[in-house]
Image 1: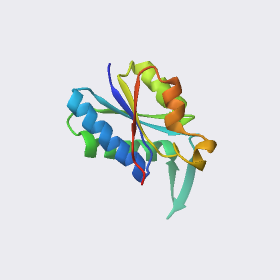
Image 2: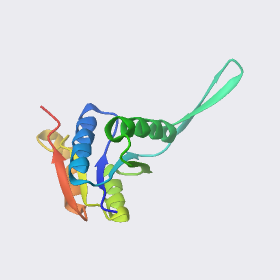
Image 3: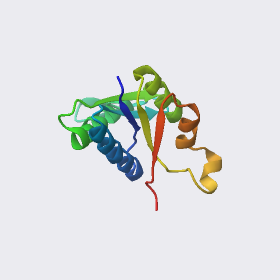
Image 4: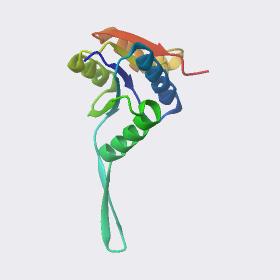
Length: 139
């Protein structure tokens, strides 16, 4: 096991954290595991020209992770997972499941007034079964 897990979404700050996680994984010779947490999975049907297409969050997230994995860790055996629920809880659960070496997160909402609203990095650091690396991704 021994993965480097990184929590991602489609934000610029998450991409910075993912890039740092990929560099750490490569330097340590450990596999990278990208995780995206969805609050809940929803689907929407769109009809056009007599055809109905179902667009769901899970498929969009899977496509995003596959693309990001290709950019960051092509040919390294990197893996990914889309999970439903709170992001901090999902990262900790994946780390426990995989017996991860490290969780990497960005520092978004770690400082200032927004910290009162909740902070994924701080929540992960409190509950993680492994090392946590918080990447400076803002200002």
